[in-house]
Length: 481
Image 1: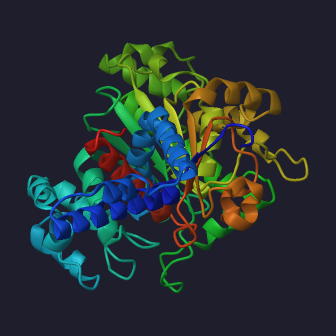
Image 2: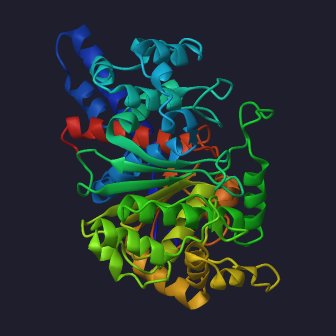
Image 3: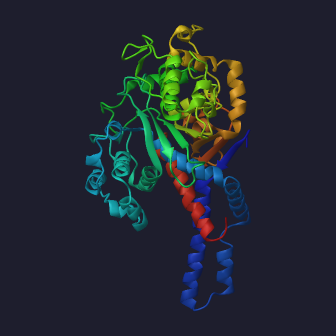
């Protein structure tokens, strides 16, 4: 196997377990017919797998045992990566009352044929659903709503009934803190992202956040859906040419500036206009004002350590802004995973983990087109512009390499494959988008989902990990894992 790629042979594991289970079932049926289990039947049950298959099964189990913690985390964050596609305008505006009742959620469920809520969720999950707050139920409704429905939804298609348990887990374990989508004035190039607060039992600490970056909205089940932003496709063209998708990149940096200031430093930031270098109120938002507001209120004095008159430097760790330890995990599917890698290169000090799914590589790209450094105009702007300028500076070749080495142990890439021998010809056995470009260094996993389960869509990595988790639970119940 080349470099550090690790194969999660889900399809192979399921087939081997099914073959062994069928042999055991046949042996029990023969035992019932004859009244006793004959030596021949016992031999047939034990010999259902050939020595080569037994060795293969053992190797798969050993690999899963060695990487179980990473797999569990990847499964958890894959649901967040899918949830990033949801537009949450109504949710963030507090207009979620009409989506936050059992009747409204049931209505969303009935939009898909043959999908009654109690027919999909287990009794335990239904009980968990009943304990959700109205806001949590509203988020669950947004995650399962179909693209042609009005209100909050996932444009490319909501969580299918097979994934409702995962949607329920997101609504239960994660709190939406900040959201931006194409309708927001501060979003450029179709940028969409959501900051979640991780309230799950497996959260690293009490201040754990997940920044989920959405990928391309198209293709959608309804290609004429007016929610689809063609700017996403333009960003895809940019990365295909190994060019930085500037509009989405700058929106991401500015969105994080707002997060870092308002959420982590507790300082209000007005909306900005990058073209004019001013806020909507016409005031230049300098770091000097940001510092003085903190000092006057006596809040978070650590923020005063930042240089007066300068923006929050991307190289400044979160601990310099907030004394409380903060865990920040970046996740994204496809284009979102590409942006997540770039985020890691710019904010290497801030991140606790990076999880990408079916994402093209962002290890090598050009900051500018034809050598024209248009971003240098930000050097003489206000705080936000200079923060953006510093982000571009952090993408120089030398700084990218240093940042990549720093985050190497925190990065997890998951691709899907239709063959256990994917790397022999990845462009044939997989989808070519996830194989485009060099990924930043980190753990690189391939999930063999078989020939029928490999498509480029955020649901497919999640479905693959769901299948793997089900297999792991089966092995654990039999004390095999």
